[in-house]
Image (cartoon, rainbow, N blue to C red):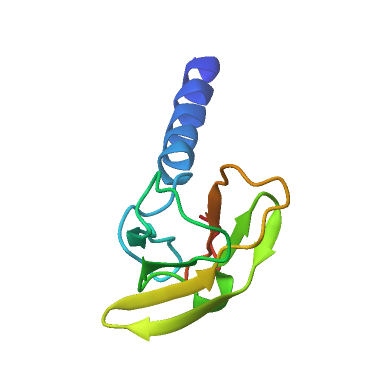
Length: 116
């Protein structure tokens, strides 16, 4: 009889621990919000000369100082300005010694320093 009672106590204690392990699904202040990027200029898969300007918009959930852009491993200096309900990010593509294609990588952090 004691073993059966111990089983029920263990079950009752284990279920709430698993249920609360994933946190609140609401939009609390400690939660990370999804960041979105849009309005890329030049558009995706475009062919442009080196040193060409580029820009895109980041949602307001982004931390302005946490937006980093790299091209072929080179950090690209960007200017981030507040724009409507988000940020406009502008910069210039670097010179690529071998020419060819380059992928623009965007790394950003949310306002709560969540890495996205």
